[in-house]
Image (tube, rainbow over all chains, first blue to last red):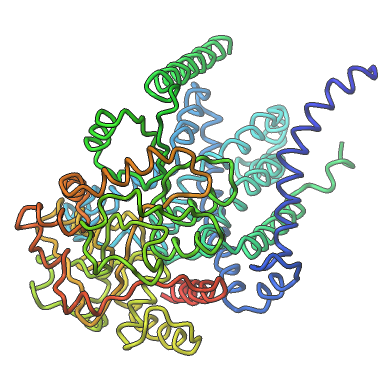
Length: 269
Length: 356
């Protein structure tokens, strides 16, 4: 690469990275060290780790994010697998991605309509004789809607991993006498694991800080860190504490990335 | 791929063209001549017909920008770079803006409609002598109930909300001051208490309300209540007025033992530029027939006594939105509390939300 070429590529990329990745993160870290009176302090972190409320909220968030990721994974893997076998798979894939083009708020409102007392879901329950149920504002409905929203982000990386899988390996496994299940268990699944991990990364972190859904669908019965951040920035204007929670989320993201990144990858290649 | 790119390019071109055309249109309609007024208001909080009337009457072109929370407005005014001539903060935010030196005092010699206002709504604790603000609308916090589930007239006090018969039927507005304030009033305390012990006791009382709470939501309450999703809700009178208009089974009560009295007020931010237009607008809005028209459109209570007299009797005598003197005397205006106290309110409230 010539020197001019290098700068030609690096400058826009570096600018982008600096302005939109490094600067915001640095600002959040910086803000997190200031209290309401704009004095430098570590009190925000001390508050966070000493108050039972924030720790409980963190546990809550991690637990719900875990459940959402788990259900998303359970649905997405088989879906991606089946999609990959289909004839018009590009079309099917497009249909899976299509809902992501719709704003999340619109989707949430659509679910409010479906789940309300006189909504479609309850009409159906009444029709089959189960009678109406309280569907909105339950933990189950929150997880259901969050899972629905996250599914495309899990399907895509798994689908791509399946696409990259060399069919010769599957054929070889079958030739050598492995059953369908054994092939899947020992060949297909391990080789598509990077896709699953990428999917987990794409789903888990955003799920930690979902806040619109906790109110609209969960009726604030589910409180996540996102709720606290929203409150600190919009109501109490305690940006320091809000940033502190933001930093905790960034650290959580780094941990998840570490756990789900394949460290042996370099050696294997 | 190529088709996709050309499609996206076409879309961008159309959007850009439309944006350009609309700025051109705005420029030609007064902005260029400098006869403008930049109004920073809540969404849908001014009768558009009235706006048109003001523009034809005075020739000033009004640019309206909207905000959805006092705090968002405060942040924007504080960070500068804006040129709003008038803003519409709630009462506690007026104190806060005043303390931050972000307001310009009103020149009372240029105001012509002061005598139209009801003296009960002037000279409030947040702005003595109305040095900085003119009341725009006022309202209360109260209980909305659906007469299909609750017998009319049986629900009149805060303490009744704790009754086991409303199990899983209650919706609360997602606002720390209001919901804790409700618990404080229920226990006979001031809604402006700064005593941590009193607040803690109120939080404990709120925790006992949990089994009755179906959801803690924001604007969506209107939609839920109009669709019979819940039997009872705690919300502001303005929101209640909209719900009542959509569902005739709904009723609104302000408990006579006390509640919040809130004001939205017109103020002049420091960065204002068009003083002629500002006073023209303030005087225009103070005129009884204009204030009455606006109140009828928005559905909130007007502080303008002469305007109230012009309203139809069924609105004027509606005790739901114009409570009697006894109730009115028990209402409390929020004081702007120190940031630390606000923080305590919100922390306690967050704990309540986590427990319920």
